[in-house]
Structures are given as C-alpha cells and as structure tokens.
Length: 217
Ligand SMILES: C[S@@+](CC[C@H](N)C(=O)[O-])C[C@H]1O[C@@H](n2cnc3c(N)ncnc32)[C@H](O)[C@@H]1O
Image (cartoon, rainbow, N blue to C red):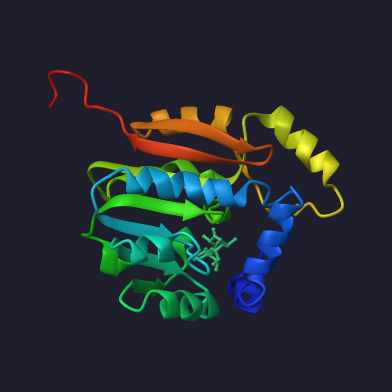
C-alpha cells in the first residue's frame, strides 16, 4: 500500500503506468478507461452540479467534468498529485488531507450532487468502510449519489482467481471490494448499493440513500 510519499513519487509516471496495465488487460487497471467513462456518463446524465472527488490523483476523471462546467472539490494527500490536478483545474478547490480520517473540517457543512472515488476507496481500511460510506452519504444533496470505481470483484471466488493469476505483481497490502459482501453491509447504513462489473478486476458501485420507510418522512 503506497503512502503519501509513494504517491508523490508515482505522480509523474502514474498516467502511463495505468495506461500500460489497462492496455495489457492486466490487474490492477484492466477496464480503467471504461470505469472512468461509466462514472463520467452517469454524472453527465444529470444537471450540472457539484462533485467531490476523493483521491483525485492526476484528475483523469474530474478534469473532464471541470471542462464541462461542473464545480469540483477534491481531497488527496499527495502534494504532487494536487499540483498536477490543480494545473488542469485552476478554479477547483483541492484540499490536501488524509481521507482515511473522514472529511476535513472545511467540508463539514458542505454537500454535493456526486461524491466519486476512482481507485482510491480501497485505501480506506476495511473495518471502517461501511461507517465511512454512511458518514459520506450525509454529504449528499437530495437525489445525490456516491460513485465508486475501483478494483472490485463480484465475490471472493473471482477475487481469489485474480490473486492466483497475478500472484507475481499482486499487492498483498491492499484489500479490494467484493460486491456480494460489501453491498449488504451498506444496507445497515441505510444505503442502496448497485454493482456494475466492468472487467474481471474492476467495477462501479452506485450508492444512494434508501428511501425513508413510508410514514416516517
Ligand atoms: C491509485 S490513485 C487514483 C487516482 C485517480 N482517482 C484515478 O482514478 O486515476 C489513488 C489516489 O488516492 C490518493 N490517496 C490514497 N490514499 C489516500 C488517503 N488516505 N488520503 C488522501 N489521499 C489518498 C493518492 O495520493 C492517489 O492520488
């Protein structure tokens, strides 16, 4: 698992490393472009609004939305990634912060139409993930959604098969999403979670608050 300095060092080569893994249809980035495009299309279907990108990296996704006129706020702990992203999105509000601690104080009372994280949320420790998403959902505007694009498997079976196939390059410190285990945990947080598998090791989770039971609204 890379820390802040690791991502600082990786920032210059990040886009080319991702492109190579994606083109080779290899773990970890097989399906990367389609993951980002799926999220991009979901957001574009809605009226223009504001987007919070958690772990934006080189801003591959949000720089496009920025050009389209969306208001972008972002969190990342890598100074180098922030510099790269800010050069593409001069007016975006980019905050250096460790999101495993939740949201920074400056965003405490803010809400968003979309909260996105691509290849970043697997850095949230598994034991706090359901609670993390529960708290994050309180920062959604009515009708808003959290969109997670990440290394993701339908179940433990596909996870184990990918790990065995890519054992030489597997990162043992990272723990990825399995949709059949993770989505039910979000129900307890009052959240609906839909999974769209994109490649053998990637997918998109669309997370939104469940409607309030009738008679309680
Ligand atoms: C694999 S990159 C993904 C970048 C981009 N979202 C994409 O799809 O290409 C993960 C990003 O999350 C950031 N990151 C990882 N853990 C973090 C943490 N705990 N707090 C803040 N940023 C973090 C890294 O600095 C990096 O920019």
